[in-house]
Length: 279
Ligand code: AMP
Image (cartoon, rainbow, N blue to C red; front, side, top):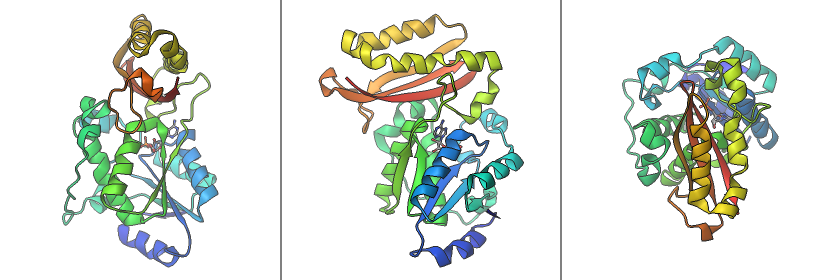
């Protein structure tokens, strides 16, 4: 695996392969786990060359404390990536991604950035959109791989590809979970082991939601889950809704499908999860 730190070196390395090899791209913020590695594996299955990036994007953190607390085990990440078979690791500094000459493109995200994570973390998706656009311009991949874990983010990314006509295939990959069902996340290490074990309740409640919607309807099914979470010590529900899987707008039961999006603050750690539902 080649580790590249500058945009110029990345361009030199990738240029000979463009239009000859299919380039797959997996952008990450590091602190890698099986979820990230599953994206690398998918890219390796479908592409000739897999580029992974590790870049903690300051523009998508609306709280300095969250940015400072974000884990940065770079040496370990490099070993994991090399073992996973990634071909190139792009590991730029902030000054490579946002040099003095950087001009922010005009990006309009509309309704999708105003709800759920966008509402909880104002400016977050604008920051995600800016960094992904910049990384796409640097790597110019044929395909890019993202986790369904960050469902709303996948919609934002698809909308950027469309708006800028980038011609990049966006692949959304399954959520990789811990044995108790908790969605893997770089933030999970902030939970004490006993709380991490108990945090499987989120997945358990999501898993029963389809049946509950059939039995009770959407509103009552959501209320049931809200009451259950209310009984769990140190769990504060930030949001739980079932919405249209493309627009994130409210839906009627007759639609018979949607996505459930949930965010729970558990012992001070924000845990996100989601599930596509058919009823
Ligand atoms: P992050 O490093 O958190 O920015 O995540 C980088 C990529 O990995 C994003 O596309 C995430 O959606 C994806 N990802 C994070 N956690 C998981 C998971 N548990 N399963 C699958 N993909 C994931």
